[in-house]
Length: 153
Image 1 (cartoon, rainbow, N blue to C red):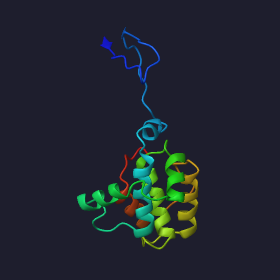
Image 2 (cartoon, rainbow, N blue to C red):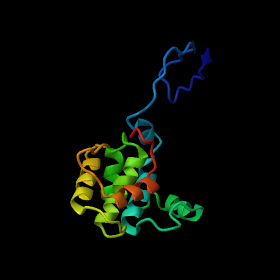
Image 3 (cartoon, one colour):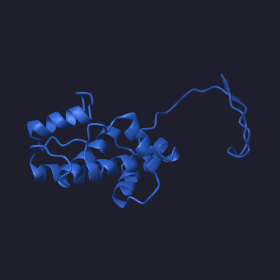
Image 4 (cartoon, one colour):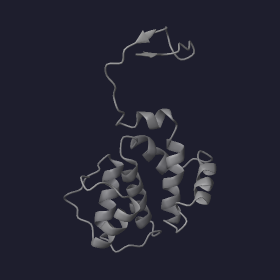
């Protein structure tokens, strides 16, 4: 049994004490959009595209820099991508940014440029699996290191 506290600023009517019988898990990015996550994700992805993956990318100092930059200026490509890809995993979103950084020459890795660009295009279109487009071993290793995910994916 759970009793929700009625707040007229967010609820149309009091719903009293209810027994929760079902719950759902958000898999389409709705929570990210409600939490206003896109500006944060956008600045991170844009930074990867513009600067690559520096050694200090996941440092506390870099995190503070990126958080401070979130929402400060329009980032058309990554702003759009973050809203349109809200249902994709964050790891796939990061993979897209890395692939864009490879295209921009900010990340160097032995890869097939055409395959890399096609996968970036498909991720932007909402895809996460590319069984028909194999990556080089070097690209696979780099992505495994930078965007670790379970073997099932």
